[in-house]
Length: 43
Image (tube, helix red, strand yellow):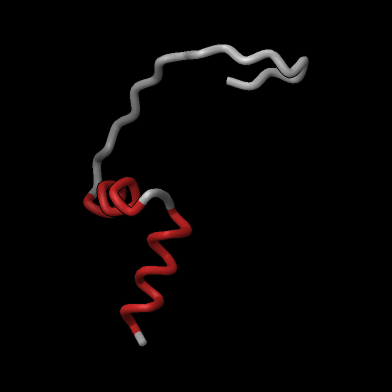
């Protein structure tokens, strides 16, 4: 975590992945790569 005073603190988090779309987005590296990949396939 980057704080407003520019210090950095490591934190551990847990996220729930409940839908196949969420898995696809994570595997693709994020939302933008997912959108771009889908757009290129649709052409």
